[in-house]
Image (tube, rainbow over all chains, first blue to last red; front, side, top):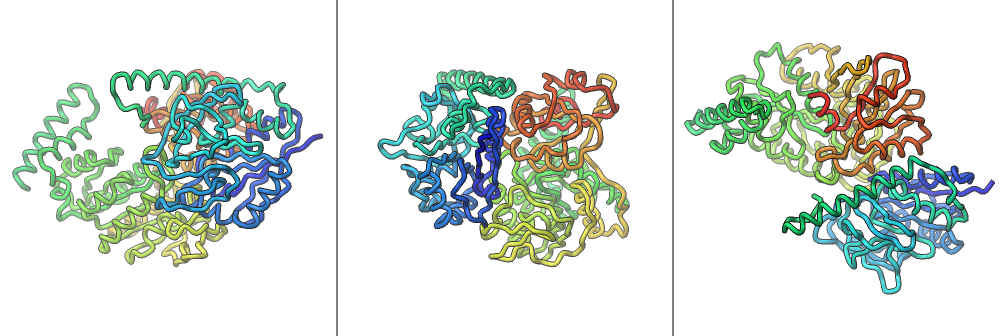
Length: 252
Length: 377
């Protein structure tokens, strides 16, 4: 039987918002598709293996993010680059997305060097961006929904493509888009169980690993995703009415 | 008592009475707001010359305050807000309701603790725990810890009693001489991957977390308590507080928990309020036998983000019949489905009870804040 190995990078540092859930969702759907899936949490004190199929990097508070990138410099970054060179995939959420770029803001807004594995840079925004987020993604072929809570403004370099066009919330905070997509990486500000709310996105990543989950029947997942999409439509309409009345359109 | 304060208290009583007559609740908060509007210095004035104890932390404030008040009964009458109104209005109402008791025991919201310390000049702080709570609304935990530490720097005269197994409280009191550090059984802290002081990753190994960089976690504890759950820990802190205040031998078999019961569909529901990852984890680890209902909402004070559902270990649900309900029941349903837990889904509590298989009469219901308040009140 085919098997995929999923590494969760430094879950003790990078998992403030349930980001470990994405690995659980991928493993769950892979198993439903008849593929064995093993999740390996790898602590910041251990070497990062270079032979996994998929690496999940979650979000974290500023100091945890800096500890994570510090631990990855050298061996970890080399292992990740080698794995990506052989076609391994990376799912990077929020702070995890930021550390893969060239630079990101530290606790006091100072510039911290990232791992330069993605064509993007992040600076500190004016205010924290918090709330439900929705986007249309031509690549995935559907509306994606999630929750964002960050203060980073992430600028993609010319030629890099975003994951989706934001219809609710903020995403990257510039250009009306969220996330980044390369041959090896899906990055997004939808934190926590982004893949739980968007099974099509999980299946897209699995397809890149050679796992066909298109025949998976999981009514609970479909009901959950549909309910969140309907909620995003309702919230978007409510915020639009509020904006027309001249009120603040922040969710908080 | 100044004339302004007297006037304020009269106006507050009138407002409270009006609120009750109009059926707008008990009128505790409105009384406080009116009093402060008329007499802005009321907090300070009403606390002057009295021994003030402040209880704060993310979880367990109301039950611990209520327990402490009962342990202190031998010392005479006490002014307290043990109903849970822990913001400025509730606190000043409690002080004004019994303006002459020598002893005052107040539950205080975590964000308000520094301001209350300046206004009330407490003798004693009982600090229970600090953890992530509604991240979208309050600050990161370390921001609150920094504010508390700064407040203690400004009040070297106050005695603090803390749970030393919580690294945030260890950091808050790291340089505070008058601290009674109580040790408990080893437990990990869901939000303390990095040292709250120096940001170095903490080493999590029994007997206690330790920071290899700044040494946090390495101080002697005053007492090492026997293993127990959060309720037992808070009770131990309350007993230490009672001893400090002069109760020679506070009883050790008394605890408090915010559990309400409800009869529904021929079952007895034990309703337990769980409002953040720490309290969910605590409740699941000490789950009684029998069926379980999880009621998950994400309105206002619950926090609108349900991502934390994925940070919790659901293994203790194994073997229990489980039904999920609440506004965000599908979030919970998919979460526990990926953990391999069979369960039912129901739109409301009544139907959740109907979904349960026949069996034990007692059902544990873990409820987020707004779900709990809707049923318990």
